[in-house]
Structure formats: C-alpha cells, structure tokens
Image (cartoon, rainbow, N blue to C red):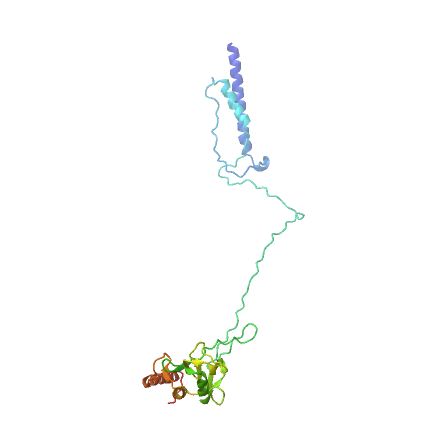
Length: 292
C-alpha cells in the first residue's frame, strides 16, 4: 500500500513539473520577436496585462492529486494569447482591404441646388430741377390718373305757391311760364336758357315727382312750383341768385301766389340776404370773386 502511494506521489510531481515547463515555454514564445511567431489578429479591444507570478513549484509535497489535475486541465484549456510587452508602445497591425484598379467605385452624386441671383437695377438720381418722368406699367402704358373729385355744387331754390285753399290752373301756369321765357326740356321740366343753351334757372312742380306734361297741363291743377339755380353755372353765383329771385317775384305777381324759401317758410328780405351771402361764400371758397 505504501508503494502505491509513493508511485502516485511521483506521478503527480512529474505532472506538475510538465505543466510548469509548458507554461514557461508559452511565456518565452509570447516574448519572442514578431517575425519568429505567428501573428494573430485580435478584435479591437484593450486587454489589461497583468504579470503572472512565477510558480516556484508546490510547497506542499502532500498536495492532493485531484488539485493538480484540475490546474492542469485549466492550463490546457486556455489558449495562449499574444500580448504586447508592457511599455513597448507597439500596436497590432490592422488589415485593410486592398482594392485593385479593376474595382470601380461610383463617385457619390452631388446635388446642385439652383441659385437665384438678383440683379440690382441701376438707380438714377433725379437731377435738381428735373421733372419726374411718369412710371410706365408692365404693358408700356402710363399709369391711369386717379379719378378726379366732382366739383362741389350748390343749389338755391325758392317756391311760388297758391294762396291757402286755392290752386293754380294748369293753363294759367303754362301761359305764365312760357311768357317768362321758359322752355320745356331735360328732366321733363322747364328751363330758362342762355345763348349757349345752358340752363340759368329751372322750374319744377311741387307735386311728386316734380315733372310736367305740357299736353296735359291745361286740364290740371297745381298747388305750386319750385324755381332753382345750380352753381356753378353759366352765370356767376350772385348774378344767378339775383336772376332767380327776380323771376320768382315776377311769376308770383302774375299767378297771384306767395313766395317761400326751400323749407316752405315765407321768403322775407332777411332770408333773401342770408341766401345771397351763402352764395357769395360758396364763390369765395371756389376761388371766384363774387360779382355783386
């Protein structure tokens, strides 16, 4: 029995010595120059290098045979890894693909965006005292002129009415109108015209819509008439107003009627003076000297 134990102990020592020799050979091989060993390309990762302590052999001659066997298995299963020497600064070579001239790579397509360039038009400074030229539209025609405001107008009106409870006979009214120089015309009313055919004083009926039918007037009755002058007209403003008042007074005397202003109030001298002043003020506002 003792002989068997000594045999197993000797076999374990031999096995441990073989393992130690193999590890020493592997370390010497790793430290050999690069051209004397096979280059192994490892993935790009950093492996910390920890120096392994030297194994001086087992201290206990009575180490179990099973422990030596497990250590030997771990040593044989581990692959030897080529590690660079600490502090050498050498890096493993990187293997790049080599392409020959037959491998054609299509250059990337560069997209060019359109560029919009604005061309500045030369500015022409106006010369002192030069008259600005009219700007032309796209079709070459000058821009249309802005619409002009209509000239202000003033209408002065007076009335000739029949006495209270009475009416004018249409035949009598027609005779008086024609005798005073009125002519039937535009807007179906009567007008007193100047030599150029322009109305100086116009005459309308107080009955709606204010028009006349000369053929039907002899058989009709009228409550009254309205006389009016439009300014500016063929006569200066104040002269046109005086012509209006003279005509109204003459017809009132012929027909036996009464004079009223445009609101139906009696036409007094004070009211006539007020209307005349309004006409003069209108003429002055237009820049025309009042002809009194």
